[in-house]
Image 1 (cartoon, rainbow, N blue to C red):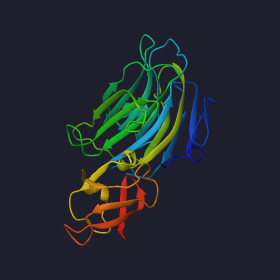
Image 2: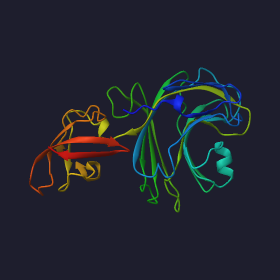
Image 3: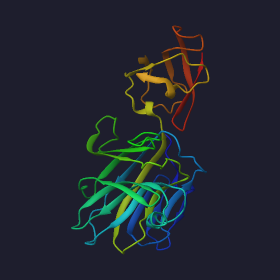
Image 4: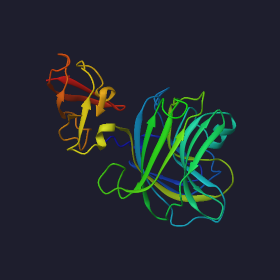
Length: 288
């Protein structure tokens, strides 16, 4: 796991709506039009442009104002620092998840991809009040109907998708538009939509932007390597589906044994390797 420290991120809070701690952001009556209310990190140009998995937890509010469209974002990737509606109307791009009170007081999460100001939004069913929801976000940078990117969000309670005890709430899939791309610089774990005065509370926690695909495979599970791999190849690129990985409960350990991996000796040879680095969803190994 690689939980981000929000105290090192950039916080805007002109109306004193936020409480930012190392692993959590508390919303206290955040208004939709609280311009400049956000918590974000600049990861650098085009940092988010490859397949990846993100995780965070969001706890819904105890009650809501009886107003429409109190839409506050608990996750978002952008190329500019602005309110989400301003990015939208300016013809910009973002991928985001919003906690949204809709007409009639129904609280839902909205999974969105905005491309050149054109929106593709999918809502969830109504979310329960005062409930922690676990978000497991899988990004396929060249997937989807247009091969330009796909966002799959597994929302569960109790634990994260793929982990012991997780209870499914809903899975939402949104595709990037034709002509679009997955290529972003900034990550927001709080941002406002930027219009109307509706408000809400919430709690964002434990954001991990560097979850490896292997990190949520059960320790006893097996995967297979499709072809010979050189000592400096990315294992994740070649995984098909059956070399056994020992003790994969947490891939963040920096020395995990891998058995039955075809090494640099060529097809048919069996070597034992160990992971020497984990980052940005890439697993690097060396022959032992």
